[in-house]
Image (cartoon, rainbow, N blue to C red; front, top):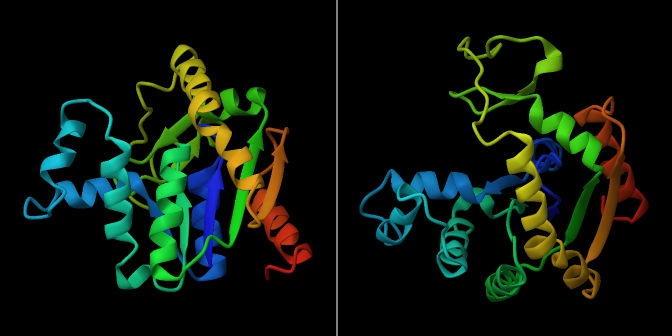
Length: 218
C-alpha cells in the first residue's frame, strides 16, 4: 500500500506516518532521512547534487524526485511506502505518479491532516526533540530528557511564531494545491480534521484507521 500524507508544518505527518507504518507493516519514507543517508555516502551518485543542503540552500524538485526514485527501489519499501513530507509541489506529485507508474505501483490513499492554526502553534511552539533518536515530545509532558536515549531534549531554532507564519504561508502557496490535484484523481482520499489540542496522536491514528475501514481500504 502506498500512502501520501498531506498537511501543514506541525500537523503530525511524521508521527502519524510512524504509527501507520507499524500498524500497516509498511515503511515510512522521509526525504530528510533519504538526504542524510546519501550525504553519509560520498560515492552515491546524488551526493554532489545534495551539497546545496550544507550551503543552506533548497534542494531542487528534480534532485528530490531522483532521491525518492532511488530510495523506494530498496527492498524495505517493496511492501509499500508512507510518504512523509513528499510530494510538496504539483511538479513533485506529477513526478511521483510517473515513478510509481513505472514500477506498477499506484498511490492507494491520500491522508490530509487538517489542523487548525491554534493547535499548530501550540504544538510547534512547545515542541521538543531528542537529538539522538529524533523522537518528538511536547513541553506539556514535562520531560527534560528522552526516556529512551537519556539525553537532554532540544528545541529547533526555527520553532518561533514568525517562522511558523512564514512556513504556513509557504505551505498554502506551494503544497495546499496538492489537495485539488489529488481530489481530481480517483485515489481514495481521507480528510481528518484536528481542532483540539488535547487529542492524542493515538486517538488521531485510531480515527484515521476507522475512516480507512469505512472506505474499505483495510
